[in-house]
Image 1 (cartoon, rainbow, N blue to C red):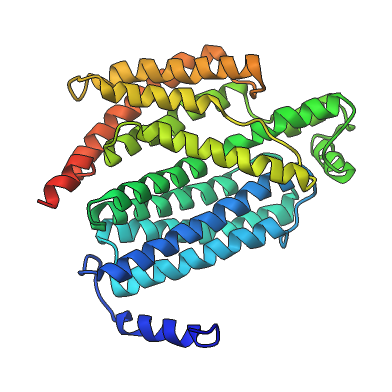
Image 2 (tube, one colour; image 1 turned 120 degrees about the vertical axis):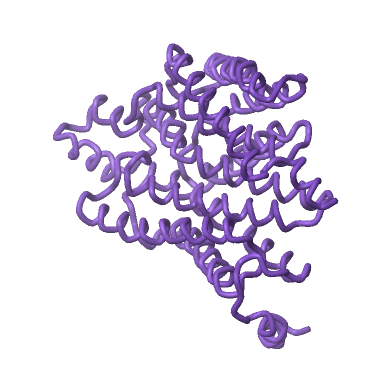
Length: 376
C-alpha cells in the first residue's frame, strides 16, 4: 500500500464502525487494539512535549507556540479525537471509562484557555504548582484513569494486557508527579546561579525578580527555583506517587509491578536528560529514590496479610523507602529539599488513602482477581 493510498484505505476500514452506540457495546478485537494503540501514541506525544516544556521554561521566557507546546498539542488532538470516537460509537469503553475520559478531556480543554489567559495577565507562572497548571494535570489524570479502566475491563487476558496496563500506569505516575520536576530542575538551577553560571536567560531571571519587586539576587532566584515549602516534594511523592504504585500493583496483580513502573520512569528520565542537555537545555535532578520506594510497595504485597492490615505495614515500609531513598539520593547525587521531619504527615495521608483505595477497588471490581474471575 502506497502513502497516497493509505488515507483512503484507513477511512474505508474505519467508516463501517462509525455508528452511534452506547458505552459498553461489544467491540471487535481489531478495533479495540487500534483505539488503545491510539491512546498510547497520544500519551507518548504528551509526555515528550511536557518533558521538554519544563526544561524549556527553566531556560527561556514562555512562548505559546514553543516546540514543546506544539508536540504536546499533537497528543492532545489525538486524545480529543479518541474521546469523540468513544463517546459517539460506544466502542472500547464501558460507561465509567467513557465518563472519566470525557471529564478528563473536558477539564483539560477548559484548563488550556484558562492557562493562556493567566499567562496573558500575569506573564510566566513562577511555579508548576499553580491552579491553571493543576487543572491540566487533573484533566490528564481523569483521562488516563478512564483509559486504564477501559483497558482493564475490555482487554483479553494475556501478556499484552498486563504489559499495556503497566505502561498506562507509568503514564499515570509521570503525569501525577510532573509538578515535582519544578523542584528537580530548581535545585540544580539555583546551584548554577550560585556558581555564577546561570542556565536561564537574563530576561527570565529579570522577570522572576520583578514579580517579587526585587533585584536579581539570591532571594529572587531561590523563590523562582524552589517556590514551595520543602515538605511538598517528599509528602507529594510519598502519598500521590506511592498510591498510584499501590493501585497499579492491585490492578495488575503481578509481583514487581511497582518496581517495573518506577524503573521504566527513571529509565525515561535518564534517556531524556542527556538529550535535553545536549540541546542546550537545563539539567534536572532525577528521582532515583522512587526505585527504593517502589520496591517497598512490592514487598508489602509479598507478605501474606489480611486486607486491611497490609496498608498499615505497607505504609511503614513505603514511607521508609521514600525518605530513606531521598536521604541516600541527597548523600550520593542530588535531591531537591525534602523536609525529613514531614514523614509522619506523609505516612498518615498514605495510610488513609490506601484504606480508601482498598474500599474503592473492591466495590468497583478493579482488582486483578476480579478481571480473572470475569473471564471465567
